[in-house]
Image (tube, rainbow, N blue to C red; front, side, top):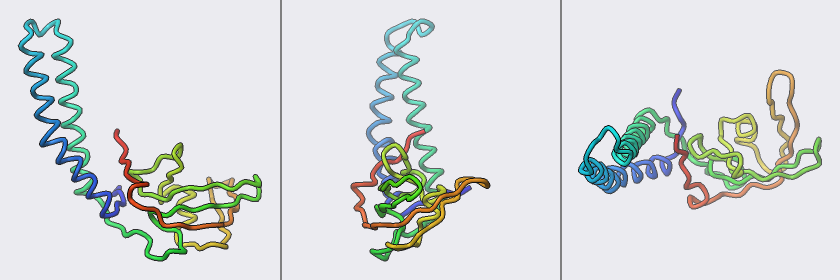
Length: 167
């Protein structure tokens, strides 16, 4: 499966890769050298911890490079009044008599606890392409769905979406 990424997602990943290769990699290698110089490696916790951090950094670099290589490039919403990527949408759910606000982002930035939902989640899919005043049906699974009315749509800046999940 390909991840859908915007150009700003890819640019941020490239920045992180550059930082990890140029700055962090050298720091972590130095930590390994210092820990190795402390003597007996069989009981040297610092050495194993330093190696683990170095390997974690290399894994993250490979992960980000693979994400970029296999990504499907998608564009952000062009229309101010339409729900799309990098928009903040306020919906009213009559069933619960509640208003909720979410930011629609790509899968690598999704974090429901922070109010950022992926464009491929059930709610994200249902909202994409709709406008203020539209009522959409959010299909959670084959036996449950609910209605929501779109109350407001607002374009958000990149500073509101700058988190890329680490695995």
